[in-house]
Length: 142
Image 1 (cartoon, one colour):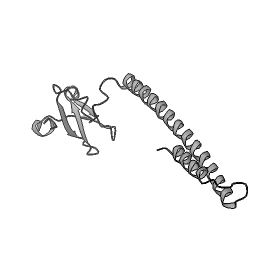
Image 2 (cartoon, helix red, strand yellow):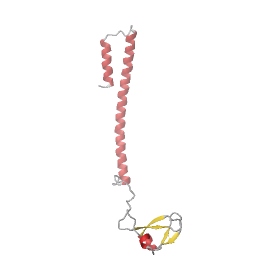
Image 3 (tube, rainbow, N blue to C red):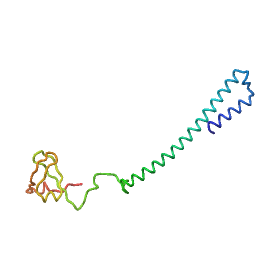
Image 4 (cartoon, rainbow, N blue to C red):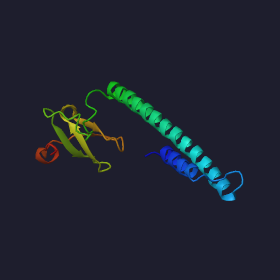
């Protein structure tokens, strides 16, 4: 039973009591209270309709946003970005330490072939020493 239906029921009960709303103070009070409850019921019904309409609009906006996300991010939007998307298992990576600042650097085979590395931290260039090949050129474990 909705609020409006309950107020209509209450109004019917009050009319059934044959309250004198012209002369009786209590009858006037009950009549005014029922009138206020009717207005509240009408307002609540209106608010409910607005909430339903807003919900439908929100669903439409959500659908549009999903379409935009699919266009921008592609089909793999459900995959989490764990930082390993660019990993190529055929490409070897090596870890070396910068002799100037001590920063650990991860390089690939092409940098190893070039023989010179520029440290991104201190921007110093240094040649790779491949004499201790097992320690400096060991592939990084995933």
